[in-house]
Image (tube, rainbow, N blue to C red; front, top):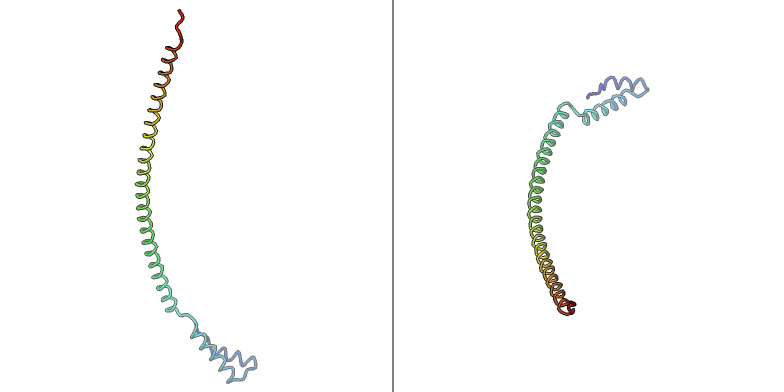
Length: 127
């Protein structure tokens, strides 16, 4: 962006500024604008830098996602193995309880059978 300092100086003179004062103000404004205004080259450089930053961010994000997927998959595999181990332990405990209950049931049936036989022998036969 450029400033027409000659036109600006004329406008300042028309607003009752002295000639040298109007020219100095116009020159100062012209320099300030020239030093701070972005040129097309500046904008193109900024666009290229931004585009490069976005590409770098995209690549980093993609790498992070791949790493996260791999970690999640590994965690899932480990969790599956742990669950299979726990299920096997529970199956063993269930089998143990089943065996205990079976022995208890058989023992109880034998005791009841023995009790019935003893009662039959104790009760006199009526005949």
